[in-house]
Image (tube, rainbow, N blue to C red; front, side, top):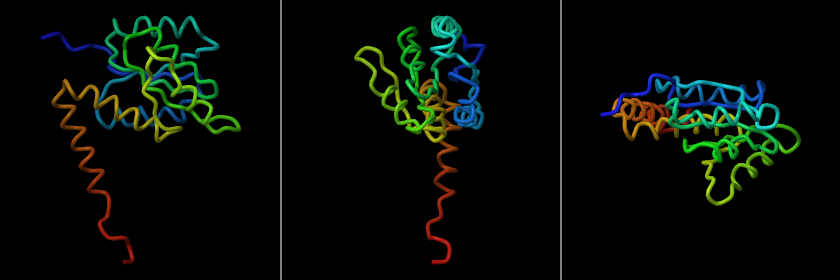
Length: 166
């Protein structure tokens, strides 16, 4: 049996500091499920060399998935996916007049052969990307699978059967 990775299992990357307000939702989910991660600013446009180095080293460093948030033209998830075999989960970040629709369309329209799993715009999408990344890892980690199942059961238990005042 191979040794488990020592470093973080999931990379959370974004194009700028302002994206952290959205991407923190992925980190919060991973914290809740006790999944190790790292958060980095890796801009496709302003720091392309850093982006390429991050993608090229991801697998060797033990990352099992990368959650990439980007707004506007949203090149970050696709460029990472082009440079690594590690699965990339794209989160459109709402910015500007189009409120993330431009980023959503950019991320979801990847060419054949360069897949990026695409999530909803904003913090809900980032949270779901965190849950999805945990589910990917849970396939080979029964303890994480148990934590994920318990989290989902708590979500179900929190939904009232009858509305207040009915």
